[in-house]
Image 1: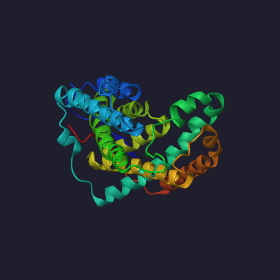
Image 2: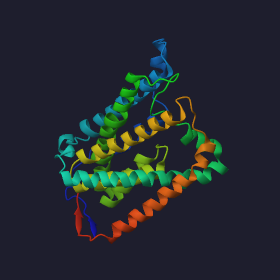
Image 3: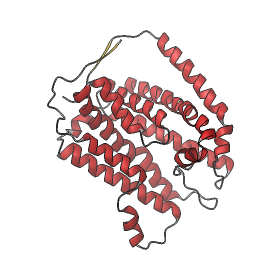
Image 4: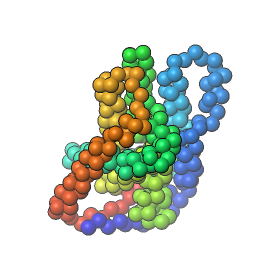
Length: 291
């Protein structure tokens, strides 16, 4: 049995402005304030993927400023304490196993969410899911090294660090102290998921990373697992482009035709969950690592 225990120090994190960090997170998903104006004023003759790279890094910079201002400076969050200790090898193995499960579950969640919608609201599915930014850049049959390395760094290192510090290290503890630990996990995972292309999968992923944070009492493990999950997604897209050609464009019809993959992932998730509940369980008392 798992018991959620609220921290005994209600004054901790009381100055954090979590809602403002979330607001910046949501705004950045749709428009980076001033970024287009700044970049266009430079009159740079860039290839299309360099604009993508620049926007990603500007987004990271703005989100970092929000974390620094509303979490560290105003909220006085002890980031070093939040990051905590190095996880044990057993914790890493458990984290990798949970990450693999969450990755498969997110594939199933994609089809649960978007397959029925693709018939009743195809334009929305194309806008919100099909036409998402590239993870791997290909141009004229080549894969430019530097922009792909920068994108990989953004996806697997910078993004996971910022998002885990923000959502698991700052927002979840703040809301847990307001509403209780269970509500803090659910609400912070909802905020994390709201601008992702796969909101249901991202919500489950947010809960999983919260569990790793509580079990390891450290942000190191969820940061590693978050980066690993993104790396797998990057490698899958690279393999897809190599298999189908760098000029291949993923379409709504192709997504609909791939429903057996979604069904297979759903069956695998069901079997995985069944095996998990067959394991012997011990009582777990979860508390926030920072008091």
